Image (cartoon, rainbow, N blue to C red; front, side, top):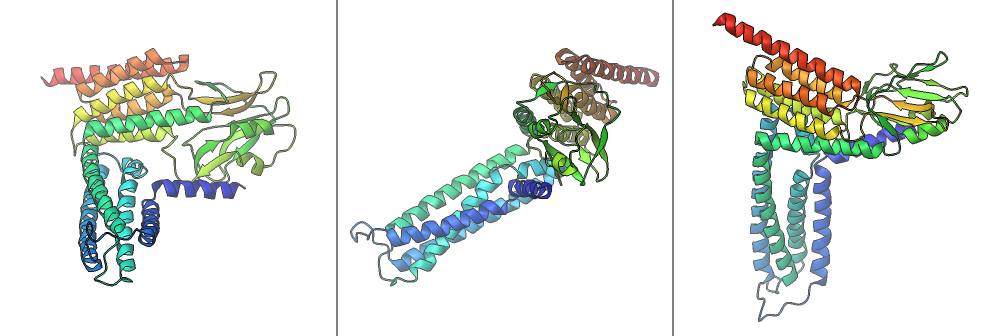
Amino acid sequence: MRNIRRMLDNLRTTVAESQEITAILGTVAGIVLATVIERNSPQPDPETFAITVAQARTSLLSALGLVFTGLSIVLALTALTAGNMASKFSARLLRMRLRGNGNKWVLATFALTASFILTSQVLLRGREPEDLAPPLVMSVSVVLLIFTGVMIVWYINGTLQSLRVDKAIGWIARRIERAAKAQEHESRHDIVVPDIDVERPSDAADLVAPDHGYIVGVDTDRLHRLMSEPEACVLIDGGSGRAVIRGETIGWVSTSSPISDNDLFDCITISNSRDPQDDIGYTVEVLVDIALMALSPAVNDPRTGVECTEELTAVFASISRRRVGVRTRQHPDDSLSVVVQADSVGDRLDAAGRQILLYGGSDRTVTAALARLGQQGARFATSERDRRLAGAFVDDVDAVRADGASSAGRGW
């Protein structure tokens, strides 16, 4: 069962990131549409429609050339954009972009139009060259060509817009919000707390990872049903995005009745890769990647680092109001039955801020933005632990700023 779940999850990831599946579907749709229209097209009226089969075939060949010219433009622009995005922003951002629907819709449109025209060409070979061509075939071809042209313009504009720093940062911020919303939906039946301190029982057994990969999902409802006995409890040390190694201890389980590892790990989905769809940490790291890339000596663009930090401040303030954090379930007597540990907003803020501080601590505008990040983090913190983390981060930023000011004074 666990292997089947992993295969299905990996298949879902492949479908989400695959570009050729929509192209195949578009091709099939074009073939079916052309066949149905050609066979059911009404007889043309010679007085209003006088295009012969020979003329129609010539026109369709010219249209097909336009389609492939447009496709070559799209592919060339895609390759150029992918290279720039990976080198200027983040390679992981490229993966998130490929999961979007923009590329897929464009490829599906090209495949639909090209297969429709090619199929119509083949079907028209069965008619005499002097016969009148089916008017519906020509009409649909024109509509598809116009739609394809609109898609090209839309795609080029969207691709160029995606290379703007502000657009890329805003796009990632919206994906962080979506990931937080997805996690909130997944834990809608759980009791979510910012942090929790659970003492491990003396009779608890280690929960050992059966595979390499990443935790991408935990079914707390099924785990809660497995922990049906009073005082039975299972703790998983890490939620979505946690990297695991086969044989590594990732938690513990305490129960008087034996429960097989297969039953337990049927409730935990381990995949070959992280899922940006509901992994807040992954999307936050992409935003941090852009900041670090901008702050590198090769780029030397501190303003982009400031923009990323400001966006992180807004994002953390927003997701702090959502039900994300440690997921728990309880027995009727209010004792814990399931605990899924996860990073709090304070943990994520501290980790992201310290990476940017490490590479941007010498720039006053960056440290000023980081100080504001920590101050706002303390303001919207929902637990005392998060407030302490934010306060300690602000102290460290202030120390770096003071050290930089004194170094500048000595240099002067």
